[in-house]
Length: 101
Length: 256
Image (cartoon, rainbow over all chains, first blue to last red; front, side):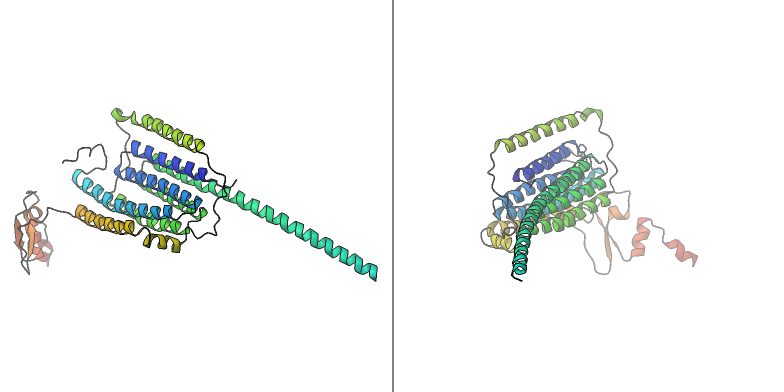
């Protein structure tokens, strides 16, 4: 009954897949952004599970760097979202499929 | 008297023996309960994470999606604690559930987005395609998990120093110093990029002079009919600017 490594990997795979489905079926830019965050978190869970299993701290360092990248992505991505909304008055990605105004 | 001492010694030996047996048995059962508890906690937190993730995808209102995503983050932090990684768990709660989600919810409320309307008929086929691709992805992951042979070593004990803040800091500042510095440069680039993206440009033209004691406004702001005209207009006071913009501020002063 003790949680094995494969349990964590399976949970991570399920979360990542849910994130992929969300990116594919969502149309709101912010909702797609949150699904990408979910995929990053699934990968983080894999990193921490392997790091804890092999008793190596490298995985947790990579999780730290992934979190930094996610923070930078949040700042720049939300800036892009605000710029799109200012120009087009919508958050629908189908409306913004052409980058030019 | 000798027989009494013999009987009492016999009883004390018996009681000591039983005490040993009971302590061993209780330790076994407590270990078993701990293992059972860990599995149960994994099921609870993993199920909560999956449920919140599905709820995030299904919800149409982005605010509810954000709240579900916070649930995913918190349950993942609990799983990190179970994996003996307390520092990562704390950073997960602080950075993800604290900083990033506050930023996302701030943008959602700033833009005041309405609920998603149903997709037009042209693109409805994307939903079954997405579910099919997800099933394929899950099948691939399950195949890999079942085909790779795991050694049945004991999972980590929490007494090791891996995952504590000191070991992470030591690793980050000795062996992985270069990725750490690259990360800092990345954050600097993100700050500059976010500022240049979110700046409202085009209101003040580059040829606008700034005279001390007066206001300089672009013409498009003064006269709403001439959008795009960025030629500067100098006004001495806010009242004059308001009069040029057509805002009726003189009426209360006439009434006095």
